Image (cartoon, rainbow, N blue to C red):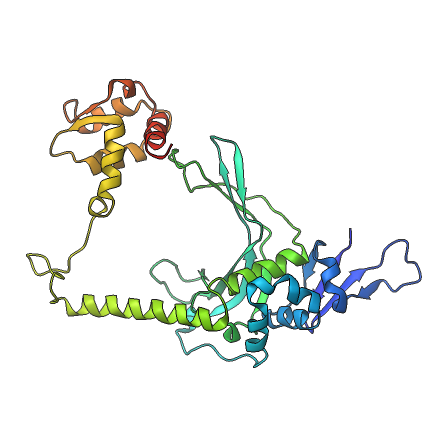
Length: 324
């Protein structure tokens, strides 16, 4: 298998094959990059601008990534990099990172794997605590709202550690990390596809800017609504901003989940209380026995066929009743 190295410039080179003794140890293949999309590549300090420049030099790559609005992005990035808007120094992106996230369903024993790695920004080391991060940690940033020209001078790195999470929605461990194996190799095609997919997720540069502006408009609208606090329906009886609980948002779904496995529930226990407690139970405990212990033996009445089920079996019984 060909070994590639990708350097700023851009320069893409491959190692000499054993049957090419007369060639130099490394051969420049920058102008024939499309021939090596399926070969592993080592990224050597490459910036986002180098990826676009590589495509500029290879018409075949422009064809391969046409669906990612590559022509529009080449036009936009040809204008050169611009500085990001002034912001808190702790909020700056230091580099772009390609990473992999796989999902594994332990019930069906199947993986769900994206055909390409994902891309996000990695922030500088924080000097002070923030809402979700502590000093000394790095923030991971989604790229929605970031103009592509503000990202051009950022280095691209590949994270070999793969995050594998539980994809069985019926287990208490749903969404939790199961393993973090390493996949050292990334192909040139994966590198380009992962970056261009994320950068063009909302379309062309103009499309992405329009989406970002609309999100900002809606956010500002909500902020103003909260600040005003005196618009019709904005306050409760005590003059506080109204908030809405899970039952008000998912009430219909909760009602159907409840009806699948239970016949009745008695105050002060609510449908939401019962279902939330069921979701929190360990998979292998007797669900109804644990719920009776928590809420009392007269707090609810399960359907007879559900009495002996474990928590994971009861959650799957409810899931199948609604979605199958």
